[in-house]
Length: 460
Image: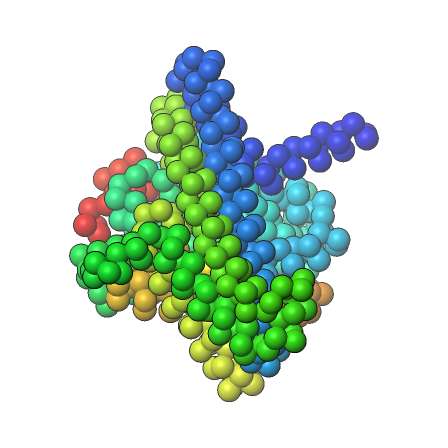
């Protein structure tokens, strides 16, 4: 029994590591193509190292965003709830550890089965987001009365289904972002990105891209993304440090001069972004060719659904514009919640950076500069209102004053939580049946592509 537990623990650990998942997928694809052993070795290690580099850059960004958030809260005297996926997951793991891991494993299996036998050929590779969603589903379904095998199968099916459906919903937009590169969005902020793309489509012109900004010769150095990001963030950090005051900032700076600390932290943030870009390039250079083996030998026409940061290299100016616009949207959403007497959702800089930046990229793809600004602003509003609406659902489950940050968690948590509260387990089974129909019906319809929505023409 102990050996079985250790094996299960090892498997679930592997499934929650996106770097290892990417490496396994790449290895399987290269073996399927009968590549030489040294190409299999390098093609397997490339995505692993690339994702570890992406993760290191993301960790560096988060580490340097946290002081900014603390300075903003102290400087402007804001108190409330900061949405954070990692924090609520850490709390939930103490109560629902086995259930979460079981749903995670079942969800991956369902995702692969769906990819093999339906037109939803999207293989979801962002393991940590699958883990977060498994945690949300175990909490919601457990509160409704599901337990044991029924909890694992129902939760796993919902996770696997959404892992297949969410990339498909906006794949036309994703192809527009990547200019036809055969990757999909594998991140549970996807609803916000697709809404941003829809907004961009109606408010702007894709030819007026953020990446075509005309910059006078003397400001040409701003075309260097690392430098322009560093300068932008220095301004942010200095404003926050001045508002918080030197006494408070000194508690964060380990004795360094408060304003020098602000400048150095802003520059470190820019370095983190650059590390992310380098990791992304490593992932794509090996993963996409390897996926041809998956697509031809194992799951015909398979499409990898990857982390949102993978898309940062496609529109690097839109990354900063999206972050700033989303953060402004989050601030306005926070004040609006305060006016109506709701819980203040303090803009979390981590979701607003990663999700806001991605929303900016999608808005830019369909609406240029105006699409990037307005689309990511709308995303910022969603990042304020959805966590506020999800908070009562999670509070009733025992997670008071804690909530998930990204849009998909809010939407699915609110929908399934309310279905369960109103209709009980019968309502959840009915919702699963609807998801099953959504997955199966396209098999009987004639579509332009063998993969649902994997066609750029509607948005060209």
